[in-house]
Image (cartoon, rainbow, N blue to C red; front, side):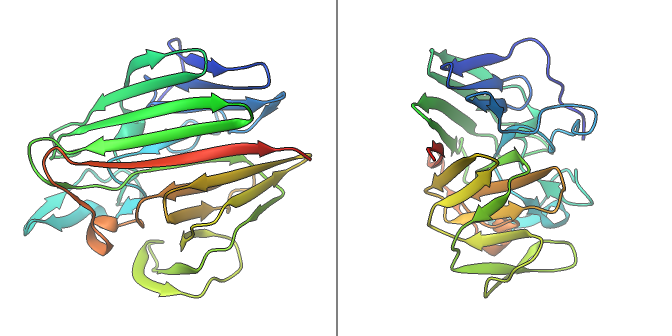
Length: 268
């Protein structure tokens, strides 16, 4: 896995109160969200140089780990490039350069032609939209199949600076095996340090010193990763890790999978 470096070519949107910077060349990721002087995301740096370890990046055309990079689709086995502890993780979009198709004071849109090689054999396209409205960041993403059917899952992976708390009311969580990957079994929600996928349709409230952030999405799967001392990740996605095996979403040629994610700073 190569490092994705921040350099020239970033774009910015927003106001003096709320603004974000985006690096199209560095995986189409948000490099920072700043609200009233408060930086929300872990930035690129010596301790966060891996492309999976900073900012807020898109997970497309899959989210989380694909076990050993292997899955079967249309009765044909596939092997993806394994880039994390023997697994294929978080898609290919976070390591690729995206094209800027629109950039206005409060909005931006990016486009990506997905590969048709050992990284991802199906091709297709991905799209992102970023918008700031008042105290809210609105994100949207889609992936579209090309000339052949393909499985797909999408989501976002924000690295938030360490909050005081994360509050949400999931209805269930997935059991994990020794690889940290869901087995497909749903179990009751348990407490403790998390690296887990939950079923959740309610807002998630993240509290920092002196401010609160409300997270909402049309995704019903949320991964919460709070083991690092410096950060917590709250990741809405359209399916669980290893979804091509556990819960495949199939796109026919030309069909689209889309999702949205809102991050709203609350007063008080």
